[in-house]
Length: 162
Image (cartoon, rainbow, N blue to C red):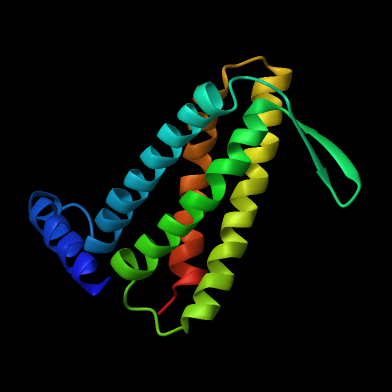
């Protein structure tokens, strides 16, 4: 993993040079890593919603509780664990490397910020898709704009604080 981190940092260093007068390396790295994770999220969401779930309701049973998930919420549930892992790895190993907190503390704090964002995603999708009848993928993109801001400040000053 350290080899992969080194490669990412070299790539980021190369692209950072023209932006160095305007952005701190931390902000630039967060934007690049967060942008990559966001793009992964959007692509996986689109593929999951359109090709895996196929716009169908999903019926599941958990502990004798029967649930029906709408396709946009089911897609969110499938994609979320993947981008949770990639986002934590990128933030811990690439963006906020100066944090002195233990990995378990970072992970717990990261998860709490992500849980807040998951709630925002859930409510946002319910409102935009079910009430306003927007398409799910653009709705997810609009919601992401808000969660990116919450994530940056939450991760910088809470999850990976120095």
